[in-house]
Image (cartoon, rainbow, N blue to C red; front, side, top):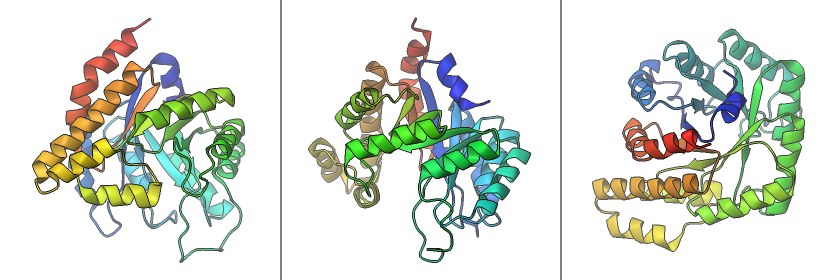
Length: 294
């Protein structure tokens, strides 16, 4: 199924994100996780572009194929283009097609010192989107950044880039995680003003330890509300309490987003089916209610 059709069929789409195991790990390590995530009944599961990059060493295709062909769920394969050559991207597209995968999340990706400068075929995610559109018939999603991309803190410019992705052929966007819903609402208002008509899913990550906070602020540049830091400080020495508080915070975010008419929730699972299951159970009735509404 092409996931852009989901947004025509449902008012609220609920999806998950997973990442592949390390190249040195057995693929069987992910079987149990996918089996448990199937019970969550997501509309689709996206698979990040794992370490290794090259078509021969990356496990994104392998996991996406398992999701599609073994577990009968709909996968979205992440694909990054920084330093990639056109022939490499073509090979990956052929492999995805051969496995019956119809959906791609097109990303610029982060630079790798080992491959820096090896190719200038793609400069931006929009270049990759255009290339995929002219090469084959995939449904293409893109990423968006409610607080601005960490390399482009001018939000207006970032939304202009989003419009370019839409015009290049993206049919849907997934947001980077955020911890303060007001940033997302302000972002949505700006996208409407700029003529962004593609559906946008809100990306939510349940934060269950302090290391995640460091990663969020360093790699994503997301703002951490005082309310959230109080939770982290209060429970940092009790892992179970901190996990439960992090789940509760994510659920509170999702309840507010659904109540305000968000078009979809994309849950960053961190490959933790327990957390995904608890959150999905907490909001399942809200999602059903949204999709019953006229």
